[in-house]
Length: 113
Image 1 (cartoon, one colour):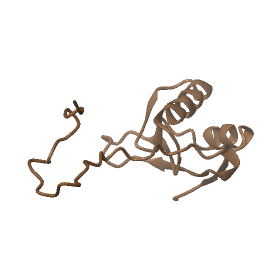
Image 2 (cartoon, helix red, strand yellow):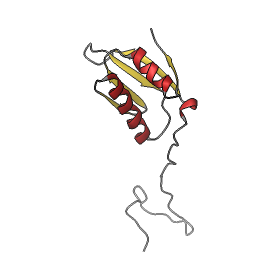
Image 3 (cartoon, rainbow, N blue to C red):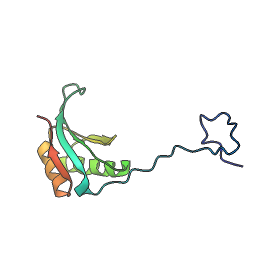
């Protein structure tokens, strides 16, 4: 018997040669640090006036993003989060974050004003 728990959305097919295709996307491989194009910027929109350092442009798995976020938060000694390809570090730590990223071998640059 075939596993039907993954078949959401298919009700019936009249094609006798029909085979259900699962929508499992290929996992995004993490690019090595020298190939990453990271942007470090200061952001205070939608944050109640608080400033955060935002690192965008990360291409890779969620686990690697979390590891990068943890490294940056530890080096700066503050909190933050890492999700959806962005690392948020609480406070204005653009220079320190940029320095840590360059030391780790990432291609990073300041963005914004």
